[in-house]
Amino acid sequence: MSTISSEQFGELCNEVWRDRASILRGQGSLSGEATLVRALFWRLCKAGIETKGCAGNDSSLLPFDAYHLAVGRMLELSGRPAFDSAPIMTDLVTRYQNETGQTHDQNPLQSL
Image (cartoon, rainbow, N blue to C red; front, side, top):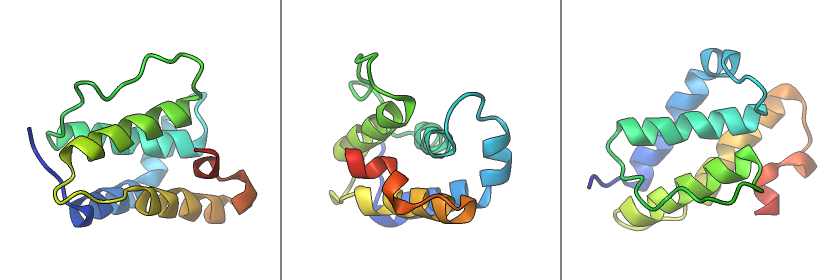
């Protein structure tokens, strides 16, 4: 299993942010926030971060919540040293919301 540091995770988030225009073109019916966190999930997979046991089977979760939960679990298992990923992901979502004119009251991370 590969590991990831908070710095490496932050860089992955920055890469997703830089590539957001092309990422968001393929969002389908997902929200922009869910699409960005989904891209983050797949980049972690491509980086070799283990996904086994990270995906839930709760079909009642919204896509954003499901991807956020999976990313969080992946980082709990593979973060070395262990780190809190919430502020880094919150920054990614907040940058998107600021760019699109959404309010922070609409931040889906606040409900988790």
